[in-house]
Length: 211
Image (cartoon, rainbow, N blue to C red; front, top):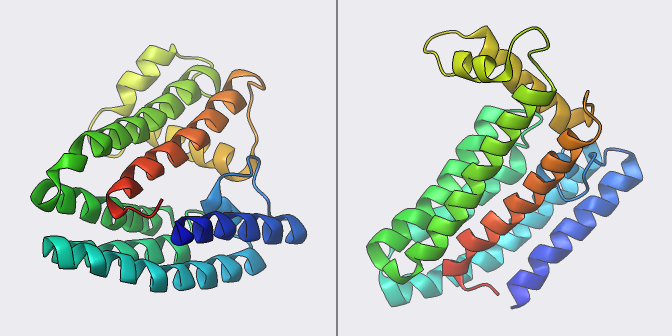
C-alpha cells in the first residue's frame, strides 16, 4: 500500500513542478508530458528512481514465492520510461513501455497465470485507446480532400507511407501541443484515452500487488 501511495505522490509532485515551470500538457494526467520539462523531468526521474528502490523489494518478494527472474526486469523498463519521455524520443520511450509491460506479461504467463485475465483487459484497453486516437485523427483532423475510410486504408499499406506519417505526426502534435481542428470530438477522445491509459497501467500493476 505504501508503494502505491508513493506512486500517487510522484504524479502529484511532477504535475506541480510542470505547472510551476509552465510545461503542463493540455491534459494534466499525461505523465510522460508532465515529466518533459527541464525541472519536471529531473523531479520525475529522481522520484521514479526512489520508487524503484522500493519496487525492487516488492519484486524480490514475488521472486521468492514464484522463482520468476523476469520480474526483476520491470523496474528497468520503468526507469527507461522516466529517463526518456515520449517528447524527447517517442520510439525509445515505447521501448521502455515494451520492456515494462512485456516483462509483466511473461511473468504472468509462466508463473502466475491467475492474473492473465486482468492483463488481457489491460492490453485490450491500451490498444483500444490507440485505435480511438487513430480513428478520430483520420476522421476529424486529416483527409479534408479524401474520405476518412480511404485515408485509413492507405495508412495500412506497406513501405514508406505519407498517409501513415501524416497521421502519426498529427497525433503527436495534438498530444504535445493540444492543438486540434475539431474542438469538440478530438479533445474529448484524447482525454478519454488519457484516462484509459491509467486504467490499463492499473491492470498491468495488479500482479505486483502494490495496492
